[in-house]
Image (cartoon, rainbow, N blue to C red; front, side):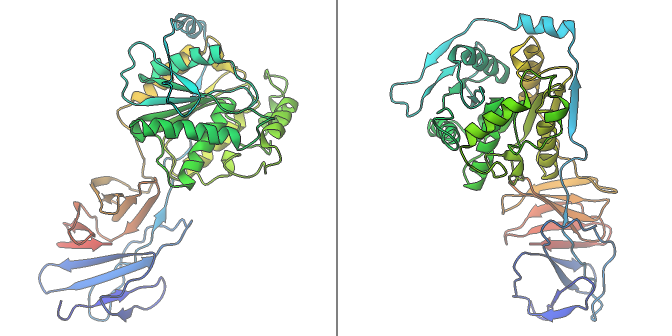
Length: 427
């Protein structure tokens, strides 16, 4: 475009001219076209990883009179405090749990299956999707009969068939054997044509630890993540650093000493502070929605709390349920009725909310970008937001409140600023 100029900006520095065709790595770029006298101005800002920089109001002016906005990416996590529900144990809930017992229908895996395990389908399960259920037992024990019953109830709660996963047991087969087997089971589910977004991971106790490890390993290797995961009483930090390991020792049905032995046998010399074996030490950003359930008297209470807080800070949609007065393995008691109801409600929730915190916020319009992210306008805060496919949230200041936003044929996002009588482009 004849006579057009672009402006390269640095915070707290003078603007410097650069040719319009120049590109800068890891920069967001915005241009405006104003009404009246032809005016074209552009700005860009380097992305600062891990920074928590406020949106800036106002904009500097270049020497040709064009308004230029300094864009500052604002990295915020989803929500504020972790969404936590405290669930008391009552006689009524115990009665519900007793009423939840029922028959069991099982179907063995086809002979050509490349994994061990079995499918368990409850009446009413639609067949749309699957539950990948990973059992507990301290990484060392399995009880197929009990696990079939649990798989049946998880199938009923999620309204889809459940695959009960068998895996090699410690100490004969230490880490990563169990993780490898669980990942192989998930891979087989996907090879059967079941979409990843219709798969729900469910794990209890050691199985809960394993499904969180699965999520981290799938993300690390770039494989498809499931639609969500339910972790019941997970051990998330095998360094055994949580305060509840001491505070609840004596209240719970398992002790710190037992957990110490279990962790050592499972790790087999692997680093207890490493990931994915110790999920809390992994990079949690981009994980699918999580429901974490834990008993209030468990020695693993703070493992669940800490992981939920870390996941929330990383931008993950997470719900933490704390069952008051309940020990480890509370899901095997009458309280399981309440838990199953919570799982069913959580899985079928038609809306997932991803709050955008800020002094004014006010998301106005949203559009799908050519980069696979969702872009939205913050009309009151004067910003453009971007939520990546992995769940990472970035906000960019553009001055006066943007309204409508849409993907352009040039691969950029275009937006309108009604009050300033101009349109903008961000790439």
